[in-house]
Image 1: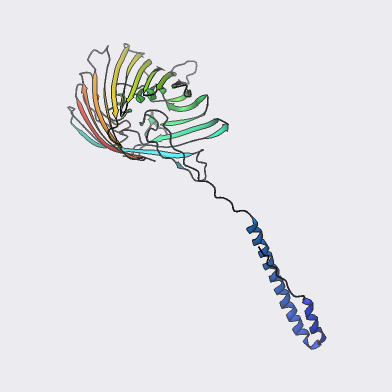
Image 2: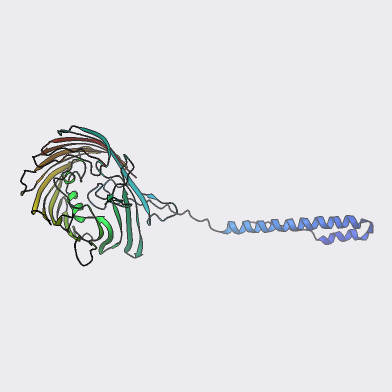
Length: 426
C-alpha cells in the first residue's frame, strides 16, 4: 500500500525575519510554535509506521475449542456403591485448569419411598439414592510418556434430602468416602492405589438387572455383594485381551506382625458378541470383629437378544467366625432388561438367599420391577415396585441403594415397597 510520509518545512525559512530587528520578538514566538508542530508531526509519523507494521503481520487463526471431557463408566454397576454408569455424567471444566487434568462431575438421585406390609405399620419418606447414590467428584490425568498417563479420582457421596455426607466409619466422616485413588494406565493395563471399589462387588452387580438399585436382591441382603470398597487397596486391571478382562485386588490391613484384615480378590470376565460370562473370588480376613474370615464366590452370565437382555448369577459365601459355628449363605438371582420404547426400559429381577445351617428358616425371596425413562442425557426418572417374601428367620425389605433411612420389618413379615424418583447428571 502507498506509504504516507509527513515532513516539515525547514525552520531556516525564518531567517527572512532576521533582516528586520524590530520583529525579533515575533520571530522567537514563531520559532517556538514551529518547533512544537515539528514534534507533533514526528509523533504522528511514528504512529503511522507502527500501524503499517501491524498490518504487515499475518492474521492469527482462532484457537480451536477444547471439548469437555466426559465421565466414562468405570464398571457395569451404577449405584452409591458403584461408579458412574450410563448415561455418562457430563463433566464441567474448572476455570484456569486443563480439562484433561481436572474435570468436575456429579449426580443427584432423590425419590419418594413407601413401604408397607410389616406388622409395625407403613412408612412414607423422601430419601436420597434410590437407584444410584448422589455424589460429587473430580477426576483427571496427565500423560507421563507416550501411551502412559497418571490418573486420579476423588469422589464424595452425600444425601440430597438432608445435606449430610454419605460415608462415615467409626464415627469419623469421610471426605472422599466413595473413591479416592491415584494410579497409572496404559496399553499394559491400569494400576491404582487408595480407597476403591471391590472388583468382586462391581462384577456381581454388573450381572444384576437392577444394578444394585431399589428392590435389587444384591442390595437388600438376599444376595450379599461383599464389602463395597476397601481402604489401602491396590488394584490391577488388564486391558481387553480379545474379550477377556481381569482385575486383581490386594487390600492391606496394616497390622504390625500379622496379616489380619487383609483382603484378596480376583474377577474374570469374558464377552463375545451378545454373550458375557464372569467369575469372581474374594477372601476377606476379619471382615468384622467377630468374623475370622469370609470367602465369596460368584459366577454370572448375560445374553442379549435384540431389545431383550437376559442376565443372572449364583453366589456362595462361607463365614468363619472367631466365636460360634461356621455358616454359609447361598443365593441366586435372574433378571432381564427390555428396551420397550426409544427412551424407556423395563427391568425385572427375581432373587433369593438362605443359610443351610440356620436353625430357623431364614430364606428370603424378592421380585422387583423398575421402569426407567430417559428424558435426556442428563435427566432420568424411575418408578419401582418390589415385593419381599420372608420366612420366619428373615426380615428383608426394599430400600434405596444409598438411602439415609429405610423401611424396617419384623422377622417373618412380608413387605411391599414403591419408589418414584428422578436422577440428574452433571
